[in-house]
Amino acid sequence: MRITKIFVEKLFGVFDHEIRLNLDDRITIIHSPNGYGKTIILKMLAGLFNDRYSELKSIPYKRFGIEFEDGQKIEIEPNEKWVTKIRKDVNVYLIESQRLLSLTDGENSTKNGDSSALLSTVMSYPGKLAEVIKGALAEYASASQSLDRSFPARLVKRTSFEELTNDEFRNKLANLEDLRSHLMNLGLLEKNEEKSLPIQSQDIDEGSRRILSVYIEDTEKKLGLFDDIAKRLDLFRRIINSKFSYKEILIDREKGFLFKSNYPEDVANEVSDFLSPSSLSLGEQHELVMIYEILFQVKKHSLVLIDEPELSLHLGWQVKFLEDLQEISALADLDFLIATHAPSLIHDRWDLTVELKGVAA
Image 1 (cartoon, rainbow, N blue to C red):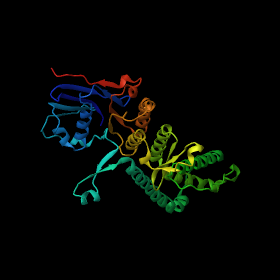
Image 2 (cartoon, helix red, strand yellow):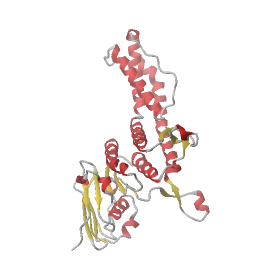
Image 3 (spheres, helix red, strand yellow):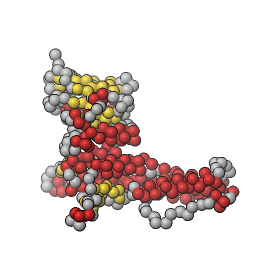
Image 4 (cartoon, rainbow, N blue to C red):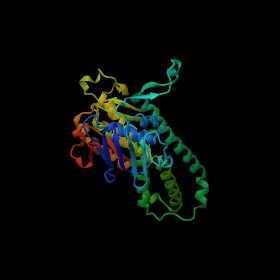
């Protein structure tokens, strides 16, 4: 269920704000001078839908409300009991301005008497991505085992087959080989130096047509399980590699991701072949964290709130940021609400903006 409007009355006892979301473009940008409540509105929205009610109770306001595409509405006043049903149908994810450190429960912090500790997000995300990849591989292995085991029985019982010419069979097999190579390059499948031998049209007789039909269908099902994660990894890698100078991100099944240095030859000997994410610049870390979280931690059909995405980003990266979000939105089916001070990030898309300037009478 998509949010269409957010409003707040007498925020800090002063401001009345109304934000209508751009559902067609899927990106809405709020801007204002400091102190008008951009970040606070994002936190109120995230607090409501993620069971962090203390954030709502600590903020002075008269009324806070959300309207939805289907006409439903939530209106909240301080200290009232809220309806939970609608909240379960809406996913809201907040990427805060302080995004390079996250609060986490840990064994060491517990030993020191603390319930939580600060953790570097860029150092934790490679391991998290490795877990995501392992999950996809486990699903692939399970499906492969099931299909391989039932292959003989299905082959014998099969009575009808898709009518394909010999050249169409060869094209399908070639496409599957290309897909395997792509998945290998993404780090999802182990690289194999041996490629399948090409099949000539004259080699395909009636008996082999039956076998090839079932084989192609099974392989499409197996490799199709990687479709979503492969698209996300491909876009993740493409966005990062288009921006990071002299560095290339590599996807690894065991390590998640790592960086390879591509420095000029005259300095190559002075730099390690592989770089830790902690060695990235602040701007690179901010970009990496934002793109990773949006692609791999946010559920589909979510509203993603991003507070000051321009932090530490090069001017050119700011200009390109909305284009990247549009690609991600199309792939992952997400809406975005952004709070920013940067005209360069808005660039030529002022049609996506809502200025917060309402003052209560």
